[in-house]
Length: 166
Image (cartoon, rainbow, N blue to C red; front, side, top):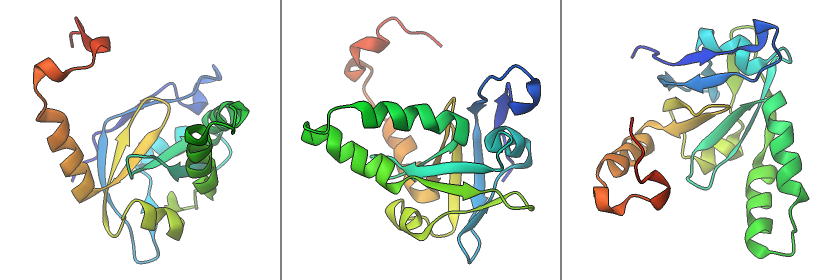
């Protein structure tokens, strides 16, 4: 399927801004668990370092960050009190699963086996732009997530979305 994702403000713009990722790309993991990053995202996602950080998300997808965008998130999360069991659980999940992954010469990343298992990634995957990061979903899980998102009752919207218009 066609890659429809876009990135603005990439690493090469000279402004030091973090990229702004949006859109969806349907991808396939190879037999070794490698995933080809769409070519239009490679420079911005690698952000000069040639590597990304991939970690677990409580929604059972993976989060893919440019290394520069990840460091402040990890620092902020680890600065929270680990005496709160909910915070400690998130620290264990998000920082515990975080892995630095190189982008190879062909623009691929090897998704580490524990992360593939966590997100149930086997072959078909969906890369979803979410601003400063991507979410990486198993294709079937993404379809289920999308069905839930469009199947809500308008009266069940969070109050933060009252009056929000697209």
